Length: 423
Ligand code: AMP
Image (cartoon, rainbow, N blue to C red):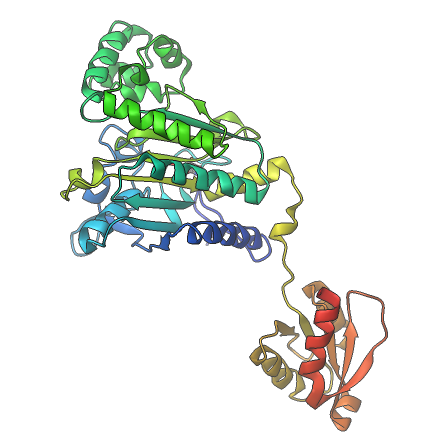
């Protein structure tokens, strides 16, 4: 049988490397928890119709969905993003408003895999439903900025735009369509054929022909209705007040069709341009009602964990926040008995992080393993110690001699030593 490997566009994260993922998740969780968001867990697959509202004209729905019929004949899809699932959960459970949720998990898109673009990728995100207040947009945008600061990522541009709403978008859409229809021959093949379906998609196209054709196109922010204009002004004023630097990017429409009013993107300027979006989001005031629920305004963002870690690599800040010791104590046992088994269990029961060797390895091999483990202390059980009900104790992180403590006192002694070494 050929060697089995991860499918294209997927990867493993092994112990060690995964500490960075844990640290990222932990930093994010602390931040959103502190702002009143609760963890939301939804299924990885849903009825395919949950995702169709993401936009029939989007790549995500048209080309990239992992959909399949299950053995019961249900048409399901692996989730390509979480917002639609969050709205489905909201509709199913009708929690009280405002509903502030955060999530972390896998998403699946059949994309052309490359560095920073995967078929299974991981997002951290927040969704806040039930308020149209522009201050909530500011809260959400600022949360992302706080995360970059906490992680030590400094090279981030925040782009913001307004896409209007049901009042002013149709008129703008007609203007844009008229403008682009006059330049149809200049558009890339895909958008030439699909222009009428959604002319805003052209603004999201990175091909040079579309970029050139759209360069002088009408801008939504010049055609906002009074309510959308006031909303956008209040959002920008809020960002100013919080000292959050941003750039208004009038072509920012993002890849999903459900956005209204505020849209934004965090661009990692240390990354190569094709994969430099660290995350983004916006308002989706029409999505809950489009999925059959009551009129419920909402705003959220999603951040790509892989991209965030790439940005950390690219900026090469002190990575110390991500490194953690694996265990506090390593038990070295060459007494041939049950000491390692019992002592490790006692240490763990006392809340200490403890590990040991198996397979009756030589003392030398066990001390090597102890060093490799990153433990601060080694506890040593040889025949002499077992006979006298004592334990050898040695600080591995400094060059000190081995000492002896009574077996009964060992847990307390380990605690005292860790405190004095680690503070
Ligand atoms: P979206 O859900 O398309 O708004 O994407 C939000 C963020 O998820 C993007 O800014 C990226 O950071 C990340 N992302 C989206 N698609 C991928 C992918 N195929 N591979 C890795 N990250 C992705």
